[in-house]
Every structure is written in structure tokens, then in C-alpha cells.
Amino acid sequence: MLETSIKEGLQATGRRMTRTRKAVLALLERTHQPLSASEIFAQLQEEHVAIDLVTVYRTVNVLKELGLVVQLDLYQEGQSRYELKEGRTHHHHIRCQVCGRIVDLLLCPLKKLTKLIEKRTQFVVGDHTLEFTGFCPKCQ
Amino acid sequence: MLETSIKEGLQATGRRMTRTRKAVLALLERTHQPLSASEIFAQLQEEHVAIDLVTVYRTVNVLKELGLVVQLDLYQEGQSRYELKEGRTHHHHIRCQVCGRIVDLLLCPLKKLTKLIEKRTQFVVGDHTLEFTGFCPKCQ
DNA sequence: TTCCTTGCAAATACTTTGCAGACTG
DNA sequence: CAGTCTGCAAAGTATTTGCAAGGAA
Image 1 (cartoon, each protein chain N blue to C red):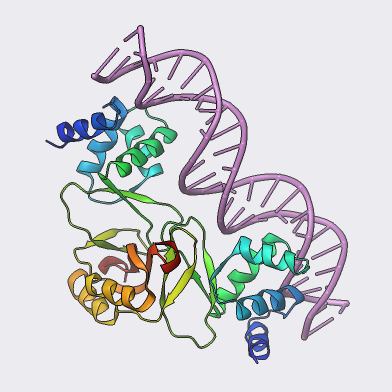
Image 2 (image 1 turned 180 degrees about the vertical axis):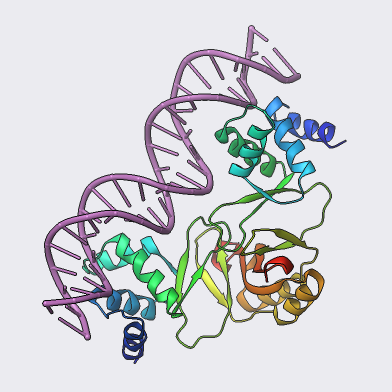
């Protein structure tokens, strides 16, 4: 399962597997929406897992450093969201501007574009954001 | 010139053309980088234009409402930037993660993709962000 | 038993709001 | 002169940092 391999990743960088890290990982694993720090906090509270918001932030940052989690900034939301990688391929999202539901777009059309940009700008292209807003079927 | 037509837009919505609005518009007009609120504030300070940071925020929001300015959230920068539309077509940006220089990418590859997304997700697609990071020629 | 991790408090960064006085039309 | 706009102060939200106590290996 996921936890064991992650434990190794943590230990390889001098870190430890803890109660709170397990809880955040398990939540991200069973949730199908990218979650914000405050949503992770609220959800764990509800499940009576004692954890501080600060610890949530520290945890997602560690998981991001280990390459286990992706930090997303959706369209003008004003907060970051976090999503487990766990073998999933790079993809993007669309968020309903009424109900907030987030749907994965299982595609990324930017491989060719990257080369074009490098040719035109002489930049070495690193990462990118591509996020959509719109109205979901229920909210149209 | 720009100022006259904007004055009409302001008046049409019961607003007025003021000293500070002129200053912000003029700055955006002559600057070729998208600017953050604090950069607009700092630049105007330097030019001895008396203006408050709060007024900068209010001004860019008014200009955004009038459709004269676009609000950008570049790749994980933690602040918004503002750019004059002024007849320019929709486009995206790449930002150097070393020196912060921002270059316009005069393209948007998403017309076709939008239709595909609508078909697949049943969303009505609205707006999107697409922003890149990388290393500019000088910082490689 | 080492030293990493957590919780709590406080700080920081960005942005918005309230209100009285200043200014535009 | 009416009603909008500005500056200042304060509040709001997201996130980070400092430090002493708690916990994993």
C-alpha cells in the first residue's frame, strides 16, 4: 500500500512517519477532490483527528517536497489546493464557479506548445498552470 | 487616446475620472510588464504621485469591472498582477523563476480544447489560466 | 536518547472594508 | 451641491515562523 513506500521516502530525507502525516495522506488518498489546507483541517476535525492547521500546512509542504503531492492554484480562488500524485499522470482541472465542484481533465495539450515557446522566447520552460472555470451540468 | 474613451466607460457606470485613476492607467499604459498592486504603488511613489495602496486595489478592480484590465495569477506567485487590455488579444505569459521577468506569449492554444472539454465534462467552459515558469536566456 | 515533529501564539503577506473628509461633474 | 472617491485605520484571509513540549526511531 501507499503508506509503506511513503515512509521510505520520508526516512530517506531524515523524516519520520507520524500520526498526523498518516491522517493527511489517508484523507488525500480517499478524497477525489483536490483539497485546500483549511478543508483538510476541517475534515480531520470532523473525523476527530486532533491536528492543527499549521501542521496541515507543514505536512502538505513536506509531501510536496517529496514529490507525492501537487499544489494547485485554481482559477482565481485565492488559496492553494493539494492533490496526491500516486501514479496519476499530469492533468488539469475545471471548477464550477457556482457550486465549487472540481472535475479532473485527464489531458494536457502542452507538449508541443512547450517546444514552440522555447523556440520563440529562448526560455527553458519549466512548469505551468492550466485551470478552467465554468458551469457544471447542475448549475447551468 | 486611451483616457477619453475610458472616461466614457467610467461615466456610463456612474463613475468619475480622477487623478489617481489617470495615474494608474498611465502607468499601466507605459509599462510593458503586468504589475502587481504593490508594484504600481511603489512605482507611483517613486514618481511622487500621492496614492494609497488601498486606492490602487480599488482602482484595478474598477478597471477590471470595466473590462479594461485583466487580472493575472502567474505560476505560484502568491499575488495578482494587472495588465491593460487596450486592444490586445487574449494571451498568456512565462515568468523567469530567477529574475522574475515576464514575457508575453502571443498565443492561446485553447479554442479547440474548450470544445473537447465541454463535450467530455458537460460543463459550459468560461475562463482559464495558463501561465508558465522557466529560466530566461540570461538566467540559464 | 536524539532530534524530528507538533501545537500554540504570533507574525507576515495580500487584499478588503468602514468611515469621514476631499473632490468631480 | 450631490454623490463618488480617497486616505487612513482596521479587519479579514491565507500562509509562515519561533519556541518549548511531545513523540518516533
